[in-house]
Picture 1 (cartoon, rainbow, N blue to C red):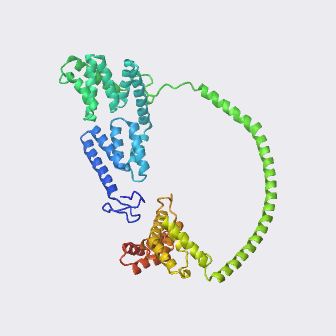
Picture 2 (spheres, helix red, strand yellow):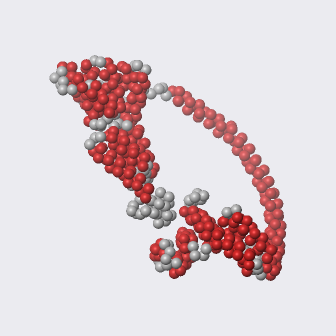
Picture 3 (tube, helix red, strand yellow):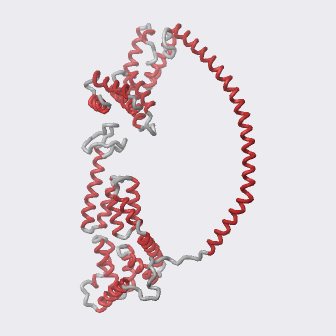
Length: 482
C-alpha cells in the first residue's frame, strides 16, 4: 500500500506513514472495502451474474479508483457483453493509473492486433446506432435488417439482441416471437441476471416448452440453415478472391485527387515565387538587426564596465561603514543591540503579543540583545513574551519547514533549501526541537550532504534518547553506513 499523501510504500498494517506522518486508518478501510467489492464481483462473474458484477465493480471503484484489478475485470465483462468501446475505455484508464505490470496492456493489444476484428466491431456499433435511430423514427423493418447484421457479426452484443427481440415482439407474429425467444435465451446464457432479458423472457413465456410447435420448428430450421449457409464456401466465378470484411460503400476519390493536384500547384507557386522573395526580405532584416545588436552590445559593454567600477567602490564603502557600526555597537550590525533599538524592538514585540500575533512577536524578540535590558520591568516583560511566543514560533516554522520538505501545504514541490532555512529558524526559538533536528538531517540526506545529515541524526541519538525520533534517526544512520 502506498501513502496517499507522499506516495511512499507503507506496510498495510501501519496506522501512520513513517515518512510524512499521514494517518492511514481511514484510507486502509476504503482500500479494504474496494477489495471486498472486487472479490464479490469476481464470484458473481464466475456464475455469469454479469449485471451484479458490474454494480459491485462500480462500487469498488467508487471507494478506490486506483484499483486496476477491478477496472480490468469491468472491462472484461463489458467485452463479454459486446460493449467493446466501454471495455477499451476501462482498460485505457487502468493503463493510465498503472503503467507497468498491468494486464490491461495485453487486453488492448489483443483487440487492436486484429484489424479485421476491430473493423467488424466498428461496423456493429455503426449499424446498431443506425438501427436505434430507425426504430425511434418508426422504421422497424430497416432497424430489424440492420440489427440482424449486428447480431450475426457480434452474437454477444446483448443490447443489440434485446432491441431486435423487442422489434420482433412488436410485430405480434408467432414466428417472430419464436425468433425473439431464441435471441433472449442466448442472451440469458451470457448474463443470467440481466433484468431486461428476464423481463422479455417472461413476456415470451408462451413460447417455452413448445419445441413441437411447427412454427418454432420452422424458425429453428431456418436459423440452422442460415448458420450452415454462412459456413459453406461461395460457388462463384471469382471464388478464388480473398474474402474481406464488410465495408461501407466509399465515395468517389476524384474530388480528393483534384484537391491534392490543386495543393501541389499552390506549393509549386509558393516555392518558385513567394519563398525567394521572403528569404531576401528575411536576410535584409537579419543584417539590419545584427548591425543594431552590435551597436547596442558595444554600448552595453561600456556601461557594464562603468557599473562594475561603481559597484566595487560602493562595496568598499559599505564594508567600512559596517566595521564602524560593529565598533560602536560591539557586535553584529544585523542584531538589535543599541539601547534605544532594543526597547523599540521590545515594544514592537509586546504590541504583536497583545494582538495575539505570537510568531511576529517571537521574530522581533529573538533579535533583541537581552543584556542591554537594564530595567527589571523590561526583563520581566521580555521573559513573559519569550515564554508565551517561542513555543508557537518554533512549531510554526517547523511545520512550514516540513511542508517545504514534503512539497505539501503552500508548496507545490519539494524545496530542501527553503526547508533548511525554516527549520533552522525553528531551532532559533527552541534548540531542543528534536523534530526540527531530524528533518534537518533528512534535508541534508536528500541533498547528499552525508556528513551534515549524520551530525543531526547523531545529535538526536546522543542528546535526546527519549525522543520518538530516536528509532528513525538510527535507521537513517544505518542507511548512511554508520
